[in-house]
Length: 193
Ligand SMILES: C=C(O[C@@H]1C=C(C(=O)O)C=C[C@H]1O)C(=O)O
Image (tube, rainbow, N blue to C red; front, side, top):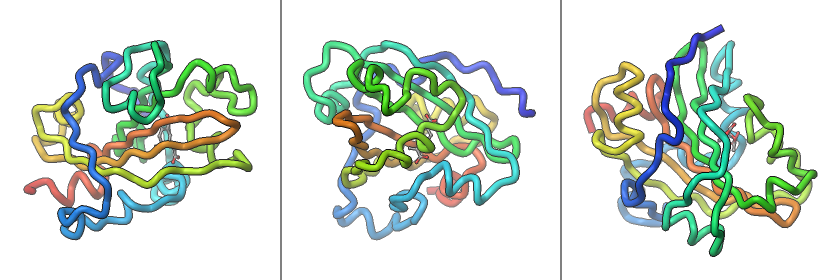
C-alpha cells in the first residue's frame, strides 16, 4: 500500500493557469498523443498499465468554481469539487479535478456522494446514457499549481499536459480535468519541452 504524501486541498485555487484549447488547433499536431485524446476511461487505461492502481482522494467538498468552469456548468453559485491523484505501482501519474453541481451529487443514479477512493470513471462509464463533450487540452507551466504539485511529488520542473471534458449522465454534468504528472509517460515525454 502506497503511503500518500500530504497534499493540501484544493490544489487548484486560481483561474487563468490553463489555456484550454480544442484539439483542432494547429498546435495540436505537435502534441498528438493518445493519452490526451483517448475517449475511453482513463482509469481503465491506467489499470491496464500497472499492477497496483490507487486513487488518493485529496478532497471532495463544496469549493469555488473557476470562471472557465462556470462556462461548462452554467451559473452555479457553488459546486462540489473533487481532486485526486491517480497512482500506478506507487508512482503518481494523473492529477484530476472534477467539478459538479449539488444536483449531480443528489442524483442517486450517479452515486457521487459515496465515491471516496473509488475511481469516478468506474461510475460514469457505467451510466447507460453517458455522453462526453469534445476534449480540450492545455499545457501547465512549472509555476502553475499543478506544475508545483508535480515538483512537490519529487519530479523535475517540466511543462505538463492535461485534458478536460464534460460528462453528462442522468441529466447531470460532471466536468473532469486530468493532468498527466509525475511518472506518467506524457509528463516524461515532454520533460524537456
Ligand atoms: C473520468 C474518469 O475517472 C478518473 C478518476 C477520477 C476520480 O476518481 O476522481 C477523476 C478523473 C479520471 O481520471 C476516467 O476513468 O476516465
